[in-house]
Length: 415
Image (tube, rainbow, N blue to C red):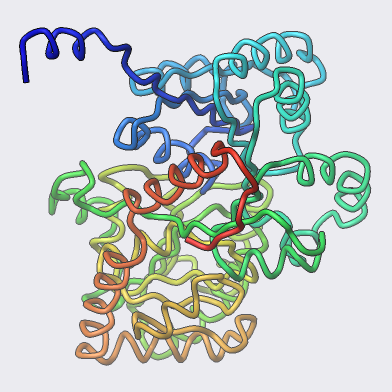
């Protein structure tokens, strides 16, 4: 190549990097899966030639969002809208200004979750500035989820949220099961796709977990007798059945111990403590609270079996993390990745997740059969590595972004 040609090529304008704005009403870690998904997609943006920014609110934060903003701004361009109530109405004008500014700078907007005014404001801003958007319901259209506060959700869906869904260029589901279940609520989705979510693993920057940490926080129970529940504390997680099953487990294994990792409404946490005392298993249950990073992996490292008997779980990122940690898992049929778990023989899927007898039997079987426990653990790691990988999730999602922006009709796909 001649020097003149090299010079002319070097002065060609570089292709503009596309920008995606991730909009989620809450990004506090205690909110569960959606904040994790938003963070991992944003972290991987540059890998696929995009820039990513985040717009959220201080919902669930103990302050006005200052601490959350300081933490996340080390990695991302982020705007946290402070709110003094669970809704944005008190700060609607500021929210509109922030949305207009962020959306004008974006090529595409990805809205996460339902049932929050931020979604509608984001949709309207996208339409004002002619910016396309995609939307992820995160399981909130599941008939079980819709049955909670059913009247309020039905009215809100009809009057407000349906428009947000129907105007989206694409609805992105986490599993085929989620898409099928959502169809019962809203009907057929003309433009939809499935992108299986990823999950962190102990090697994702957490380093090795010190033995002292394990001993200090999770010393209850003898070897082969530790049960771990790690999720948001909510009635749909079916903790009452888990506690009743532990009463049966303790009858045959007095040293069995249940670690509850997570947080929820104080009144609900108190009711669970009261239930443990009534069942006579208070000394066999530890409420560890909300844990992150090394302490979370310490809990995984100390456990012998992971149990999440949820009545409904769109994906269950904590389940996929437990699989990465090599733990056999026991889950309910309402968990949308239960089919993969059963097929991989990485754990047990409950036929009746409200039967404490069945749940106790599954826990005891895993306790007492070390070969089974180790075999399930190996299968769990293999399944997680093959199916629940954030880099692959991000690759599929950014490919969908590109296809959504491509000229011509969009062809629905499953990735």
